[in-house]
Length: 323
Image (cartoon, rainbow, N blue to C red):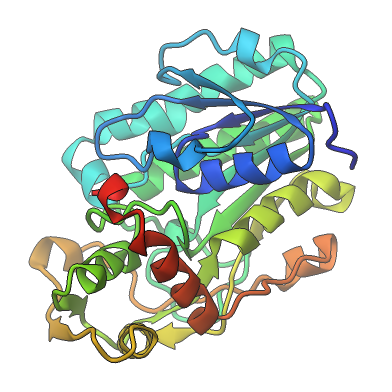
């Protein structure tokens, strides 16, 4: 696909994944329109888009007129979401409003203003809940462990319905833990690795909850490449795919790697899961993403040690902008 001068609409464009995607699309010459509501507790940060030649619109996807933003778009990358699991538990109505109802608003706007646009939807592995078999393929039964998983699953299914009923080319990517530059690191609302990195750079021990759970982390450049590949490859359209990353590692092994990358200056404490977190923890997870690799030709290229090192280096001179 030739991205030059092609209009692309990115929801959640000032967030972690959205901003990295906006930078990559702008570098390819696309005309990028990004929408972000900068909601409290989310991942959006104005500094995320520093240096990106894009048109940023500040607005809440639940309220703003989406038709003008969709009009003329060839591709819609839909990353706007409430992603905090504890936030969804605390306020499930707001969770549903953003992750499901607002998705229907966007679908209706796209029907009117961009009926031919390809849609790549950011989804989550959280749907699967606790699994018995690893790695997890797309045919794994869905059993969301929390309110956020339910609302995100509803949003995904509205988009897949749009493909089945309207024949729109839609791709849903079920992401695992993603990390890299522009991640929210002030707390653990996006991923545990964010708060670990903050603690390391501030010279404080970080906490590892449990320790034996397996995770496969995806570096943000690889996530960005997956979004673009999903849009570019017709073999992906109409499909739901898991996206993995580096080979799985336990949280304890990941913590040891963070210490290694820090040059041995970092340290951590191991503790039991807090009770409210334990009830919604999914245990071990790593994705079987062979279907997406076959359809798109995508492969993750950034190993854990390299990715964690690049992430920590990026924040060393920017820490104040992300706290």
